[in-house]
Amino acid sequence: MGEGGNPSARGFVEVTIASGESLSAEAVILGWSAVSIEQPAGCEGTKFSAQGSLDGNGDGFADIQDANAEWFLNKSATEAQLIIFDAPLQGLAKIKIRSGKQATPTAQNADVTLKIGLVKL
Image (tube, rainbow, N blue to C red; front, top):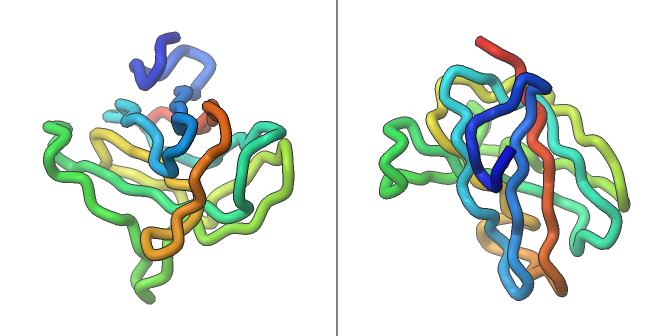
């Protein structure tokens, strides 16, 4: 499966946060619910947040927050962990993952590839 491509039969997509950046490339998840992120060893930072797009055009990405205005993926993790979401992200056409929060992003020292776990809707 290619970078940011359509989900495979295994139920995941890969996205890369480039060296010097904190926001990943976009991944197409239309028809799937995002349920987890696999954080590889060597990933800078221990918190993640996300942006989503409903229309899939790429121009409409917005930060994802829950009903209490908390960052959806405000999870702490150490190296090489699988982070399970409290609730699945449903109804998105595309998603991007950020290391850190919008106000305090964490730039990566090298390219980092994350796997986003998916369940078919």
